[in-house]
Image 1 (tube, rainbow, N blue to C red):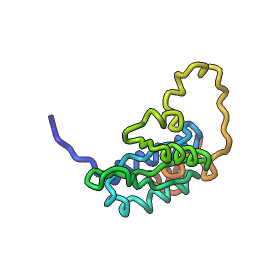
Image 2: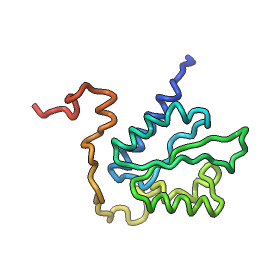
Image 3: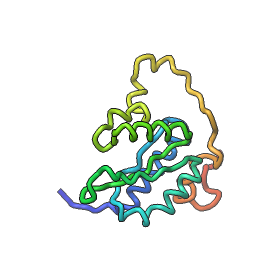
Image 4: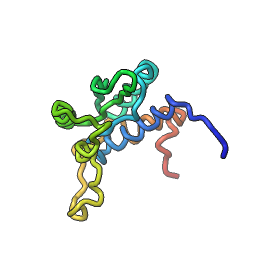
Length: 153
């Protein structure tokens, strides 16, 4: 087995980008960024905020003060609509933490909906289109200006 390393900041930001796209396109109500150490926050904050802005979503920085400092990890709660953050905070006020009680957050994170009872009767609808166009963060990071979206021949 060959060992390899993954650059942690890029991995975190890549996952944030993927979740942000799901939120922007309303495939999820909320997402949690990958957990990261508190000391990672300064290195990822600005780019995370930029991704959120491009995708038209919002962030809330969860510092997890209920996790002992020696084991503490943080994450961003990512959402498009404020009532979603309200629900997350309501669950947190009840003493639940996704690190230990993920099942309490499953509906909010849109887990189990694709195969849920009656899912075949759901009619997809978007509340709001993405203001920045198609995949603005991916476009900015991976392509030269004007190269994405690819024009039809």
